[in-house]
Image (cartoon, rainbow, N blue to C red; front, side):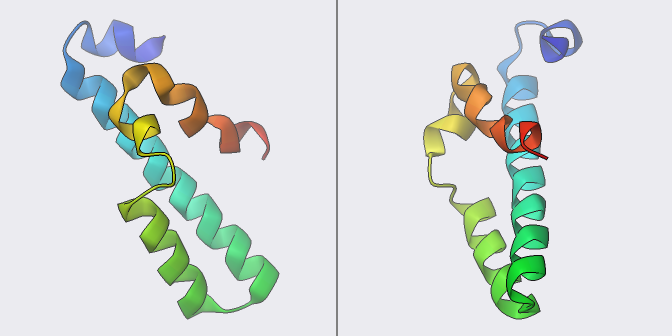
Length: 76
């Protein structure tokens, strides 16, 4: 893993990477919802809700669960 090389055993870097992946997923969700519905405000609200409290909190809190954070990028 790249962040193991960058951050070593310090947990803050791994958690920061998970948080950034979650925010990137929220941006992807916003863009998809806006494209499907055309509703800018509602799409922003749903994406913001997801960014603040994702469905699987463990994916952001646990470094071992990062595979679920990066899953939406593989389907792009």
